[in-house]
Length: 61
Image (cartoon, rainbow, N blue to C red; front, side, top):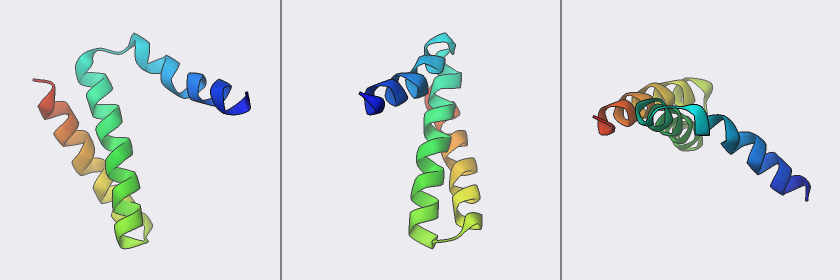
């Protein structure tokens, strides 16, 4: 039950976003996760987040 509440709390704010904002947020989050895992550093996570956010924003247009 706690996992379901947490999932809803994480997804609900995206319901009020435009498509561009939603894609940017999802891209940044995914990029940060992949960058952090791939490089095992905060810098890699930051770079992945920036790149993912940019690609997410571009994909919405």
